[in-house]
Each structure stands twice: as structure tokens, then as C-alpha cells.
Image 1 (cartoon, rainbow, N blue to C red):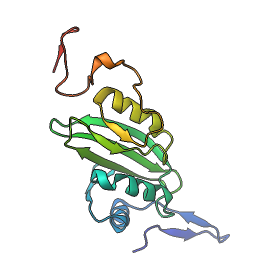
Image 2 (image 1 turned 60 degrees about the vertical axis):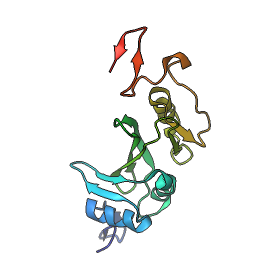
Image 3 (image 1 turned 120 degrees about the horizontal axis):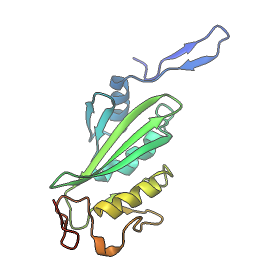
Image 4 (image 1 turned 90 degrees about the vertical axis):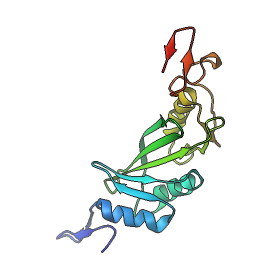
Amino acid sequence: MPLITINKTTDNSEIRLQMDKTQLGEFIKSIAADLEIKEGKQYLEVTVPPSGLYQLARQLREKEEAQFDFLFCLTGVDYGVELGVIYHLRSTIHNHSVVLKTQTSDRENPLLDSVSDIWQTADFHEREVYDLLGIKFKNHPDLRRLFLDKSWGFPLRKDYVDDINIVTK
């Protein structure tokens, strides 16, 4: 089964069609084996260990079959024990999407690789995640707080307590 279906028109030009979720999953597994892949309702969801995140992201951006050229959402999540980041990627060329998920159990010094050199839009998304959840991004060009000063702590963490404004979770 081909990864990308290519049809020829009557004038012999090519029309590229998107991979379905199964084909996309097979392609991603051919890049990195240490992944958990699940077909969600809307997107293919790929859980990747933090150590493999940057390499997988780089290959998804650069490989001709994938060309994920658009990071349209980057979200930080506090799962209770782990802190994680979710990346929504889209290929505007092949019209397919995927969600990458990664997490760390290190709540004291959470550190993940930055993808801001792969997708420029990650710059401010990563700064926001750092500001609100305290996840640091290794090799980020300007990792500093975006909205709050140091006195705030990290207000989107489940264990956050603010005695001054009486915010408890």
C-alpha cells in the first residue's frame, strides 16, 4: 500500500491525496519505533518519550512524505503526577494532521526539547507553557515568562496555591 496516493490527471499533472490515519501511523512507526500510536476521533495521536521528541518532530517536518509545516497548537498539561506537552501538527501540502504527546514525571525540574527551531510559532507557545506550568524547553532562544512575574509560581499546576488571592485547587 503506498504511503501517499498520487493520481494523474488528463494533462499528466499530479494530484497528491492525504494519507489516511493507518498509513500515517505506519509511516511514523517507520521513523521511530518507541512510540504509542492511537487513532483518535479527529487526529492520529502519537505518544513519544521526551528523549525522542525532537528527532521525530524534525523528521515529520523534513520528510517529503510528511512535510508537517504548520504547528497550529502547542498545549501544556498537568496530569497530576506528570507534566506534558501536546503538539498539533498539520501538513498544508499533503492535508494531513497528527498530534504528538510527550510527558515528564520530573515536577521539580521539568525539561523538554524546544521545537522552536523547527516551527517558529512554537516560540511563544513554549514561553506560555513555561510561564503557566513551569516546563522548561532546552535550546529555546528566549525562554522567559510571558505574562506573569516570578512571584506567581506556576498557576496552571494542579498543586498551585495562592494564599494572597485565595486560589486553591
